[in-house]
Image 1 (cartoon, rainbow, N blue to C red):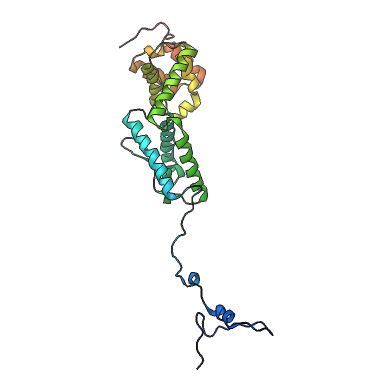
Image 2: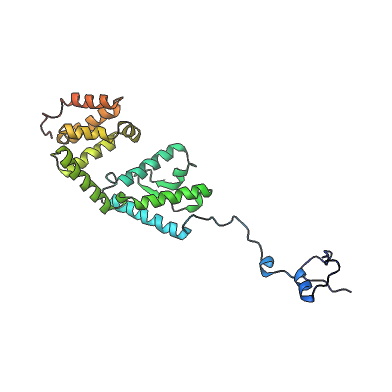
Length: 251
């Protein structure tokens, strides 16, 4: 009885080239299976490939960002940090877009506190385009100066010194910060995009807005939010506060 040849179905025949002789070693190679071919095929989805970085490196970058966000919150600077506000705006807008939207999967928002984190679950990104987008956002956040406590404080100090030099602002840094904080608390992102920061800058430049009490300032910012145009917003605030130039500090 003929000996079965290894590696292939015995009924499978390999034709030798007509008129040519091949060595025993070469003939044996036709039937032998390499270790790679013999290895069992791995089941499941293939490993996701990330541009530029490994998954471990990306997770370390995300952890670094999230730690910075925690420190901003602990220092009470989350509303002062431009990068934190930007991330928060995107995260909360994503909630309106639906559970499966990219940004809703990229950010995690605590519904009780509104605190924002980047999701460390990299399996949420479905394709190469989403993975590329995620990497790009992570890189940009890490480059932002106001993603840290130190960077945010330096940025606020620089803005305060600039407004004093350019517009002769007479208030303190705390009063300057309070103006912007009230503006962001009262006027939502869509309204802020419509009005632009120059609207508030004109009020700071031409009025003693910083002298208003917290309640009065919130009311003034409410007028800005309800106005249909920039000019209308400025005129209504000026009229409502009688110009603000002559007001006295109110408790």
